[in-house]
Length: 349
Ligand SMILES: NC(=O)c1ccc[n+]([C@@H]2O[C@H](COP(=O)([O-])OP(=O)(O)OC[C@H]3O[C@@H](n4cnc5c(N)ncnc54)[C@H](O)[C@@H]3O)[C@@H](O)[C@H]2O)c1
View 1 (cartoon, protein in one colour):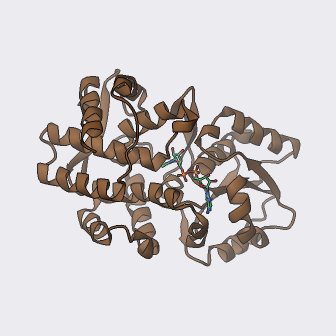
View 2 (cartoon, rainbow, N blue to C red; view 1 turned 45 degrees about the horizontal axis):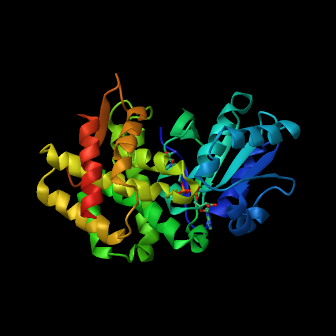
């Protein structure tokens, strides 16, 4: 099950032509404050004149039931029917929540993703995972459903803040670390100049993600490897979300997660020390800023890993690396080991 995707400057024309052929009863476009300002003007003329527009608040703090309520309420007020299309124009947060609302509204209407962040273009919009955060836990409520198309246009990235671009690049690094050693070494040679190779990098990352998802849509085995960095990463992200002034970006949390989980793999003698050292040196070079939490907070962060969706029988199961370019999954780890990894990060960055 692979998402149909179109990558390139022509994606707006593709959308316009495709919409003419489909004859949807209504077209609704979902934006947030930033994508309304920076992205919507670029595609407005390619949409049917009588489309509807819904604006939701931007950011992870709003990836919740309250925002779903706003979206479903608008769809209901406008009597949007089952032959309608929802166009999700935004980053991973907007596409996760928009896809979820579309997949559940009247038991499901069609939707397309138009990702506007690097993170959404290489990762979040592919693979059909949709959902929202609930009671402080990431992506706790959700469904699997595929968009009709994912339309990737690099033009959107011109207005993306640099911090967001770097956060998205974390998922690019993750893809190469779990599945393509040669590409990882290529990324290393780029140093911080990766933005000059964005088209190539985006295409390559989408290919890796789709190849994995195609073999295991419902995440029974291989797809778990895509969660490298996410057990510890989601725990840190969820923990810091409790304090809005300390909240960090998803990709930034995943960097810490990859550092900790690679360290755990090395401690378990799964990952050669030389591989670990290269990963550590590279990630800390690209992301020199430290994500702040105190030693007193370590056990609380580690406990959040108990809610990870890959766990079974209250056992934390990690996806990690056995070498650069090769991932393993279902590696059982204890809370104590997670704590050690977080302490190692705090001491050594
Ligand atoms: N479904 C999946 O498989 C999957 C995979 C990875 C990540 N995710 C989810 O993705 C989310 C993170 O996505 P994200 O990093 O894209 O964050 P995001 O959606 O919050 O976007 C980041 C910020 O950039 C703004 N923005 C978006 N496009 C812009 C543009 N072109 N110009 C200027 N500003 C723009 C947004 O308004 C927002 O403020 C997390 O919730 C994460 O859990 C989902």
